[in-house]
Length: 194
Image (tube, rainbow, N blue to C red):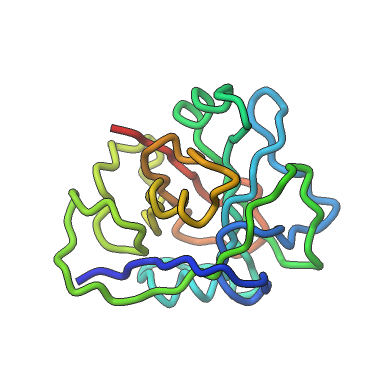
């Protein structure tokens, strides 16, 4: 059994986990950019309580939101950056919704968790929280904990205006074991393809 992630189109809310929509980062927090200075796409935001409810052995201040940003553009220029650098993960105390510097933003989709009775393993590439990551190569950041994975096909169905965000592969969220305050480098978002 594993905990599958389901994405359902819904207006965003700061207290619930969402794919897409606008983040709630403070206005004085710089919008994450890739190594070329291009604004990244806001992919998801997760309340600390959502993560700690499903992942044991991690401590996150319950007031924080975790947001994932990823390289993306309408041309194929983002692909090398996505595969070589991955995305950025920040932890912050939410404020009002921040107007994106990346247009258009992803449509907001509520993330819900359902128990899938199938067995979990390294071949399980479905979107899920916890469990065994699917073919995640060894990571240099051994102090980070695997939180969830998002597969390209499920994301494409939810975001038809932004095809190929994960370059046909899987995105993995890894976080520090302890996040007690706002952090511009709270973890890592790794994108891998076969």
